Image 1 (cartoon, helix red, strand yellow):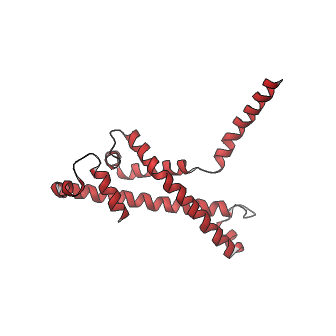
Image 2 (tube, rainbow, N blue to C red):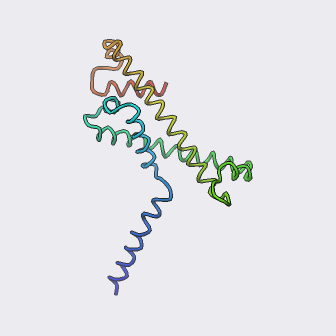
Image 3 (cartoon, rainbow, N blue to C red):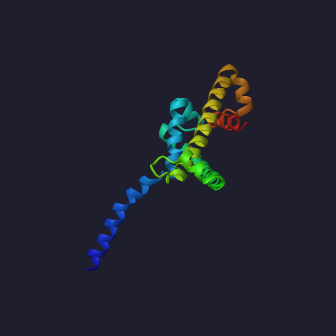
Length: 165
């Protein structure tokens, strides 16, 4: 009897897990999507050099590890901004973001939209920085090495500093 109860409980949890996961993307999912976009926009070779990795898989793992805390922070900031906006004018907020017939999904849509905007901006900054560093390394290799070094992570240092600036 006890075994049947445990088996039933495990079955219920396993059935509920995909439904819960499907409701809201995690920061890891957001970070992975941003890294995939970044890889696509940069190209595989530049992406690998940016993260000082020998393989695309290791570069992707490094990118996700770096992007996940930023995605969590973006989600927190977006949630706060949406709460403030909703508090200021609830009816306009529901009208602007609500997508279903009763506009009750406005908060989730707002947070999702703001996180996506922040992620897109960050990805675009890193892609532009990578292009800038690639051009700098091509035009003046000696100057690039003097400024950033000759080790495998030199390109990544350049991209990181250029994106922050």
